[in-house]
Length: 541
Ligand SMILES: Cc1cc2nc3c(=O)[nH]c(=O)nc-3n(C[C@H](O)[C@H](O)[C@H](O)COP(=O)(O)OP(=O)(O)OC[C@H]3O[C@@H](n4cnc5c(N)ncnc54)[C@H](O)[C@@H]3O)c2cc1C
Ligand SMILES: *[C@@H]1O[C@H](CO)[C@@H](O)[C@H](O)[C@H]1NC(C)=O
Ligand SMILES: *[C@@H]1O[C@H](CO)[C@@H](O)[C@H](O)[C@H]1NC(C)=O
Ligand SMILES: *[C@@H]1O[C@H](CO)[C@@H](O)[C@H](O)[C@H]1NC(C)=O
Ligand SMILES: *[C@@H]1O[C@H](CO)[C@@H](O)[C@H](O)[C@H]1NC(C)=O
Ligand SMILES: *[C@@H]1O[C@H](CO)[C@@H](O)[C@H](O)[C@H]1NC(C)=O
Ligand SMILES: *[C@@H]1O[C@H](CO)[C@@H](O)[C@H](O)[C@H]1NC(C)=O
Image (cartoon, rainbow, N blue to C red):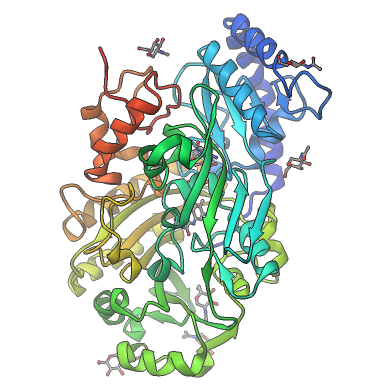
């Protein structure tokens, strides 16, 4: 399943980009005053007018394209058809972010903020709007400061999860942070959009464990939790920060974990009763002891020339194997877990186990964002409230035998535990009690198949339609961090109404969407921070 980006692909893209940049320049000519004015504005600001390393990349800078491309995670957006930013800014200090916001506002330039670049629809680095835009890329706001006494961490808005996990493990074998399983995911998008992984059942979302933040608002001011107030602080714990400002730092609450944890990941094919096991899993996984997390990765596999569907029961237990086995025997004996299937290790090694990094990687590779494979894909999400019948599951498997599903994957992630205790309105993320598990639907394709990417996108849209009767309804829930523009999007300009945005807003946030729009109206009434799926302010006209 690991499809790394071939170097030739980057080269051929760079070439097509050079051709493309000619027409881009022509486009820019129509707005020369804007670009000039913006750059002039920046250079007059404190922090930019001193001799510092270059942090402004305009299209004629040879580092512009490599900087733009380097953290594009979904490489279907490498396509040169997209409008490119008139500049990329890589701030080294908070002040650089403030100046970029002020100058962009003066010249009516759109701002895209990028941390890890993992947005499923590329909204941190491309714009479907015609308006000129800049990227504020936070890669260099990467400081991490951990206090083991108070069990808290302050991290820069550009820190990626792997770097955070690694830094925590260096300080203590008994501390962790509950967030996603992919090390190259950025905290900027992830924590402010929810953030879930193998520790979620015990400790809740990453956003649930955010205790302070520093955000640059539409006036270019830096606010912390106290000065932003509890409404805005509520909104950025799951509502996506991109609608409200630029987060330059988070304060996170770290959690206690045992020195030794246990992982296991047995595979079961249809011939090994995968359907019955998955059916049963739906009834028990959300009720397991909260130290036990068992998710299922479902793919099509080719075993000796025979296609079948396989569930991999990828699991973490916060304890040792002798405690795990009786627990599994009691709650899920059908899986037939044996001691030989289990490995005891440190939590940071378990992070590596879940990470999908190429085999042979070490915990130090968790820090290197470049080691994570980049892929072509389209994804969607769902929440399941009632267990899906075996017949409906079999209908799902049928779709896995279609040609487009060769590299498709479903991820069933259990809820329960702490997630069921947090009220629906406590943070913008509403998918709490009653949601047994979340499904992520994914379809990947290769470089060779990219010319036909539409057939894969059509496949996953058909799958999503098939799933409708079996998942949450009115609204059908979706997870903001698995962003899906099929759910609806804001149009050009800043005139999207609350009612128009409700098509997707209610799916991500249920009734919290209304409060998000209220917070937005107060925090950013002119809608400076907007993108194709940002929260709209209530219209004042
Ligand atoms: C391979 C892969 C694995 C994943 N695994 C998980 C997982 O295990 N669990 C899970 O919950 N999710 C997972 N995700 C989804 C991930 O949480 C989201 O894509 C997340 O939004 C990515 O954050 P980012 O900073 O990397 O992305 P970016 O593309 O940089 O940003 C995403 C959005 O947040 C905004 N943003 C980024 N930084 C800031 C900031 N500092 N201030 C304001 N706005 C900002 C951007 O403008 C954009 O709108 C995964 C995604 C991928 C591609
Ligand atoms: C940079 O600009 C700031 C604000 O405009 C000003 O106060 C400062 O003196 C300038 N610094 C230099 C070195 O020009
Ligand atoms: C900014 O971050 C990039 C990527 O992590 C790194 O290569 C570069 O050296 C950093 N620049 C500065 C000035 O720290
Ligand atoms: C389970 O299947 C996956 C995907 O086919 C494979 O990579 C992995 O090695 C298998 N695990 C075991 C324990 O056989
Ligand atoms: C599958 O389930 C059947 C009936 O419950 C059982 O007899 C059989 O042993 C199981 N097969 C495997 C491989 O576990
Ligand atoms: C595949 O074939 C090999 C060699 O014939 C055999 O040893 C192995 O058990 C087969 N695996 C499966 C899953 O059928
Ligand atoms: C957005 O709305 C504000 C206030 O109504 C207006 O001043 C501004 O020009 C608008 N911007 C765009 C790009 O339409």
